[in-house]
Image (cartoon, protein in one colour):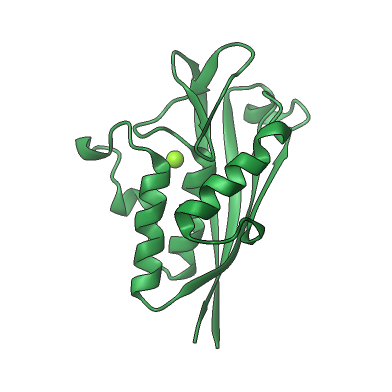
Amino acid sequence: MQLRIGNGYDIHRLVAGRPLILGGQQLDHPDGLGLDGHSDADVLVHAIMDALLGALSLGDIGKYFPPDDPQWKGSDSLVLLEQVVALVRERGWSVVNVDSVVVAERPKLKPHIEAMRAAIAARMDLDADQVGVKATTNEKLGAEGREEGISCHAVALLQKG
Ligand code: MG
């Protein structure tokens, strides 16, 4: 059996007038902020996609879904995730698990974690216990701490054979 590990990271700016979508869930920010981006700016799903692509050295999501390509404008990132998982499976690999941590001061993510895990697992055709989603604040430090943005780190383990 072969194993591969991949690492993914993403950050998007918090701005007014945009929805806040994380793990496919639309959340309410106390100041009405949302994540800016060409797609739905779902940093959690983007970091997971980059971890999956990274595990097979397939590049990053910008290569498959270029931000200057109008066809991905406003994209549901879960749909893009399905495409990335298909790419992985086409090459004969399966996903053992993914794990992630979202760095956000607000809103409280804990009430939404199970829904995020379920939504991501469903699109990846995995069980929810193969999808780890954790959340932390940045203790008011740095860009995330000042609520200039929300970031996410993810890892993915793949197996073949
Ligand atoms: Mg992104």
